[in-house]
Length: 174
Image 1 (tube, rainbow, N blue to C red):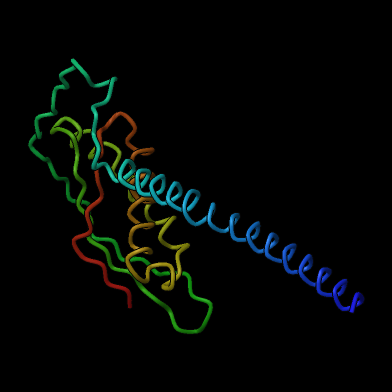
Image 2 (cartoon, rainbow, N blue to C red):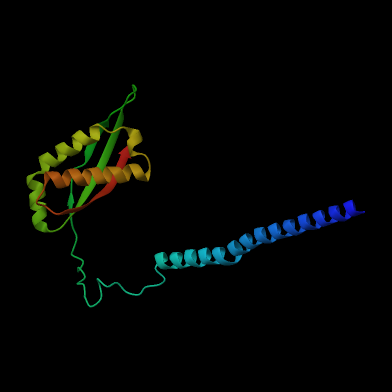
């Protein structure tokens, strides 16, 4: 019987240590569940509200400073001659691009500057457009890239003039 009593005592001690281990294990989970998780949720929610702009405490750089708004100036447009360009094609079939462009300029003085350098502008456009393929003009991203490239080239050709935008009136790829 004494052996059985010793076995019972050992099994009781094993159960007590198992119970202590379970309590320790649960205490770590409870800390994560009840302390760390709410802190992360509150911090993440606060950061989301802050970056979304719902909380606006004012900007120190703008306090007391009244910015003057630019009055919208009257737009002046300049029509470029229609361009018919043979696009770069790798096959036997040739592709053509017919394009009508209007430029938005800053003032009527810039129109005179544009007329003075018109051959240079048309040459820059011709050289650039002949290097394009029909695939380069597909989709809105292709047209956006085309607009940016043409704007960059015309600003370089007529450098003192204020060219604000390139407007497509007609684009036909055949």
